[in-house]
Image 1 (cartoon, rainbow, N blue to C red):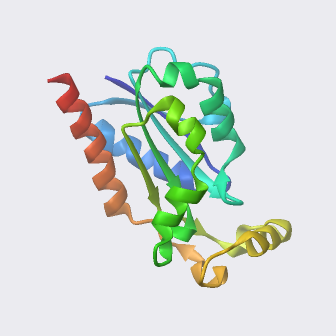
Image 2: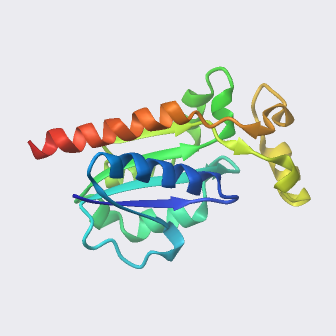
Length: 175
């Protein structure tokens, strides 16, 4: 079974998650390609699509929105799984907030993913330019000041578990 992991990453954190998920799926016997969504011109030849995007300004990165819009009909015909990386997940009720307010529900309905999840991300304030820092602070609507989340909060065990769930779902579908 051929799996495409298409991701949209602003600073590399989501790309690292994509590569990690790809490694786990490869260990489970799947043929995996991971690529930035903005570099893909087609999805032919892939049975399964795993989508991942960082959340900026309360929504998916434009590269992911464009990708899903462009390939919505084809995605609807495949097994699709999706995750987002968002530092907001770290807050109490943060995951619920992300899933309710930061997802592009109209596009999700079109592609009908088998699983959608949110992982805590990575925020390195030293690598974020001043304009983006200002935007982060101005748009942040959480309860904890965003500078409290300066660091890497990705839970690799949680990400691994989700990747194994994808492999299990695909194995069950094949049987």
